[in-house]
Length: 359
Image (cartoon, rainbow, N blue to C red; front, top):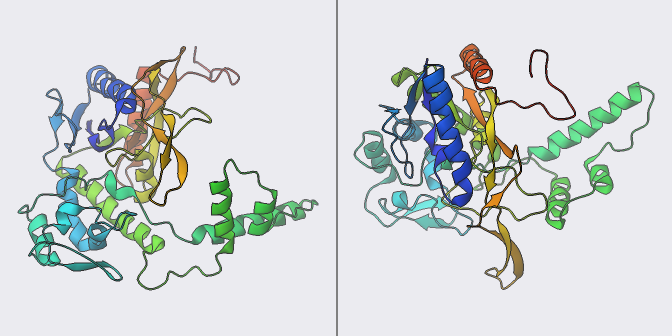
């Protein structure tokens, strides 16, 4: 098989990324490449050093995005950060002043946006350094959680009633009243969900549902193009470069537009097979840092650590995702099952016991 490796999610943004990225890169080459004989083909992206032992994709994800985004999702280039600045400043620097959002004009160049996109698609303008398969996965939330959660508890109560039981948790308000939240911010978020009374998005604001549909179409076509142009059978990527977090500990701070790959499958509407790929014995747990925000408020935030923590065996797990274009899932299943059998990385949970035929 020819297997593409998505390097976008293997860029090391901090010390915390190193243990799993190094381990998964070695695992892909050793088991899939050497032992099982697959031809590995890697995508090239900002921040990833070219592996001389792995073939490069002739058509990258960046090139596919440049050719397809102007047609399918031009709004992507106009995203703003929480601070109200362009998410892709290299694009804003080339175009004439243009409305990015209602009442918000950005742009300090001379090109009309459509002409910049034309040049980008034709390879005459470089892709903004921070625009890639990894950074486009951030989506505006839709209001649909108010609908779906309410629907779920309503149906759940009806199911219990049909079995002769009375369940009073049948509305979003009842859910909030009976829930225990791990933080006040989480409680506030659920109270805000319950307060939503209209699923429509006001004119001029980002529409989460529309974005999800556009992004799914864009990602699917990008994936199919990259696979067909590089003659790939399937694609693999690390599930997350960050290990499971310390319970009750600080969160890893944002770094270099880091994002995890497990949003890719749901956002693209594709089926992934997630296979255990080993364990790491070294982690860099972030620490709490007391800071002051722009409004002068004191708050604790996560601070990246440079101090390694050694873990007892077996350590913390990491996984590899196997996926392909829609309709070809049998190839992912074939490769994933072959890898699991050859690697023997799966360790039975102590209280579950091994499957038949496993040690």
